[in-house]
Amino acid sequence: MTDPIVSVRGIERTFGSGPTAVHALRDISFDIEPGTMVALVGRSGSGKTTLLNVIGGLDRADAGTVVVDGDDITTMDEDGLSQLRRDKVSYVFQTFGLIPVLSAAENVGAPLRLARTPAADREKRVRLLLELVGLTDHAEQRPTELSGGQQQRVAIARALAASPRLLIADEPTGQLDAETGRSVMALLRGVVESEGVTALVSTHDPVMMALADRVIQISDGRLHE
Image 1 (tube, rainbow, N blue to C red):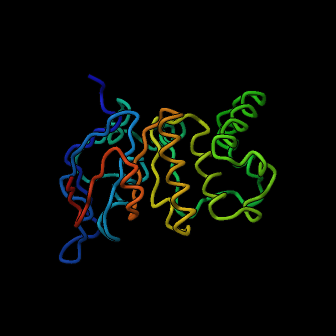
Image 2 (tube, rainbow, N blue to C red):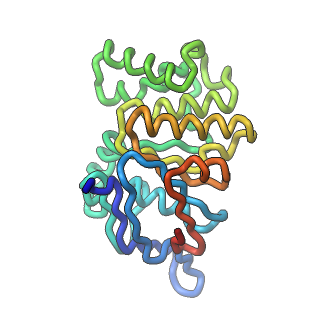
């Protein structure tokens, strides 16, 4: 039986203390199988982003364990977490997060430059990813010259550049109109299959829920499947 790519056990996260404390996550436990797309659904303030940040190593839990691709990230120091985010986990945000002065191709290739990937290999990977997201003809355009949907496609391509094991997307269609959002969600579904990546996506969108292999609901910091 295949080991889960993500294994979460007893995660707790509280912000503040005393009577004003906010219990963002309460005894969260679940597994994610490799090569699947999981939709994390919940209202604003339900704990979605906090959970994604804990799994991706951007935030630390107060209790419990998170294992990503066999590594217990709750015991890692900052250097270990940085390496995790460089080698195994990539993010897609609803605000795109592209570097304005770089072209689409340069944005996609930025993680590979940081990893000191040889230029020929880097250029080949960038071309492949831009083709995958349907932006081959826009490789030299900067983010301000692209539509919101195109910028999000560049962000997805960039997130895939270093061939991560886990792709975390926090409301990736939140800034997009309905039609563009549907195309981006279909793209995410496609890259799970073509790249063999596992995706954990927070969303309010019923289309994304329909495309997911599994839907997990969160409310008041607790999970409900």
